[in-house]
Length: 584
Image (tube, rainbow, N blue to C red; front, side):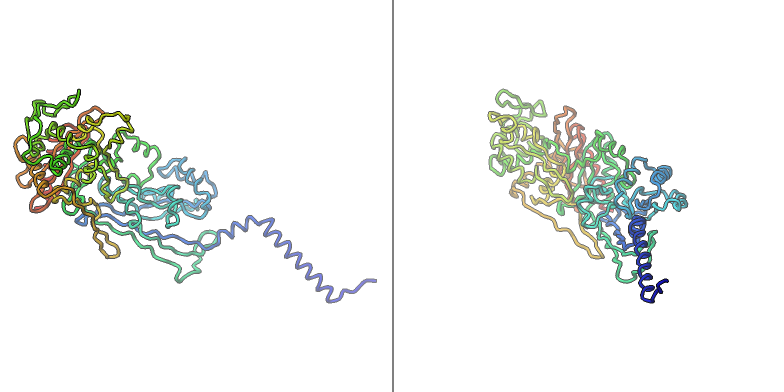
């Protein structure tokens, strides 16, 4: 006999059978082929594509370009789409100027950014891009993009340069919208004004399939346009900048800075040797970078704000002013007779003029730059008085110019000598040397320029700056600058100005090589000894004025010789050029 199956029994078996099929299907999907389908699912998701803004550009005071953004053909790689790493790497090094080691490092460092495109080669030649793009069907992980790249019109230090963000910078800045492909300001104005130059990112939300293609499911309110960076109008005059750079002696290092006396705007900013910032817009190798940073001439050193030097005789005006303000002397006071030097204890301090200048008042002491006059004057003050008065004149302190990494310089105190040489150290000899700008005193060329600009501007010190105004979305904003009064009276200021006039415009003044007929030039020479034992550093500083302008200047050459014979003629050529430029 057999048992007849009823309808409920058949239905039960059918349900069990269906559940078994479902169970085995789920087991196969999740266990047997779980990894496969997990990877497929991972590739089908919503992606947020960042749209980067165009970086703000820089222009000179007459709206002529200093930096540009030009098109760049860039090669990107998506690590998650790499099917054969070695094959891809070989293709890249065969067709582009990049080493296998660098390619491997980029792929390795980006191994966790599976579906983020990573920049691998930048600024590719157009013909090369067209030729290789035909082969990208075989390399789905590679793609080309047309983007903007920074281009600098002429070599300089003040703009600085942009470079590829590194891991440390990315870790700090990623919350502000930076990606691993971002370029950021590394030095100069590019770094100082990075936040406003870069603009603000936009975005686009995409629904993609397993191949990365946009499914276009989202069509409304899922895209935000980027805000382009702010344009900077600088105080720099391109024509003056180029001229100053062109006449700088090829065999010398140093700095030349030209500043508008009333506004504090920097008209020319030249530090030599310099470097081509455009090299950082390409694929700079480690070897090329090491060659630059290890160059003994230090082309990346901005000598205007990062270089500190003994000022030599250009510092004598500070000590003269201290004597006048403290009423130790007046315009008629004559100090000890200069016979070529002066004894202090058992040490003889020489004057630069071996025959001696005789007895001089303060005006002629500055005109002839007599060392003995200032040796004698130094005995009237404590080192602390000199130290404090120097800093009150904005020397050996940062000017706070709108550039990163400015150095403060240095002026020693009694305590510094005790800490370094012992508590029984005699300060007199050091103090005598300091008062002619020698020894441990160190200033930057910019500090000296802004100090002499204050002398030209009735004692009003103006903070030097490179940014004149910003332009953002057709809105212009002019920069406000800080001003302060230096500690000197009008009477003593006029006496100081008379002295600087005689340096250049009277017979036997040390700066007569800078005199001009059309422009009144005031100046001070300096020849500062340096610890390297080579030629003295050559200084010529001061200001020049006429109906069209009033500018302060510093011409400084390392190890070049006497300021009056080396730097003063260069200053004369610059002032003459600017006069001809402005009268057009």
